Length: 359
Image (cartoon, rainbow, N blue to C red; front, side, top):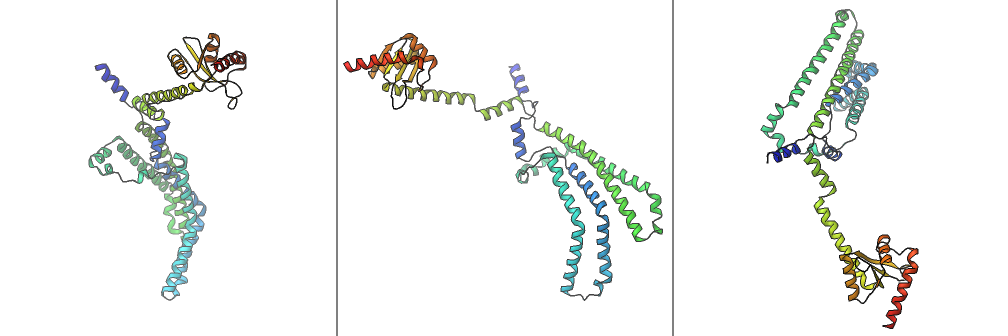
């Protein structure tokens, strides 16, 4: 009894890797190994690259709006038409200035997701689940190992970004102190340059953290989707079908095939026997085949059934031991006999036809 319980325990322990079918099922539900930090890091990196490339365009657009506001639009009358026109002009300039950044953000977001999980669309995560508002389940999530990992990861990101920001400010402290002697263009260039440095360095730091986080997410995903030996066995049954049900289906198919075979015996021309162990029912119909073909065959009990049906329907039985054995081994049901047996079967059929004519 104790051994049986131990075996059941180990069979139910989730120690096996998820099968391809299990992975496909959870993927359809939107459950994949993914790190959001990878998306954030790649997004920040590409956005700051675009800012570095298009920084002059953005500065020109922003200063142009500021300049036009105090040199041109300040002289316009305050009417609905003028205000609408002014807003359209501002929005147009801002859109063209921010378009490269927005485009880079979209491409980076899509690319980072495709890089991690490929193309996937699932509405499953959007469905409302009552267990998400269960306070007990919520408390378990708060004090779980995953929550602890997320806390450590958040603290690490704060430390990394703070260290990078402080280091860049400390490196440029002398130049920052001299900003009072620079004009607006020089000050903007300095702060833009320092912002780009902070952004790129922070993105690289987050990218390193995201690689570690992605590794953990894959490990946790594999752990969450482990299967027990019993689960794998049940999955195999669901795919292949229950062996008991399959055996019953096969048995039913054999019975139906046997019934069809037995129903053809009354139409046979002759049954060649062993005489006790083998029985082969032959039929010759020149409209269906160019040579005699087997309509039924069997050994032992099935052979006895074939002979009984043949006697009941006045189908002649002819004993020929070597021919019966050879036909049973080499010719399947509904197949014509081989050419090497033409002579022997023709003689038997000729004998049968002569006897039937006499009768």
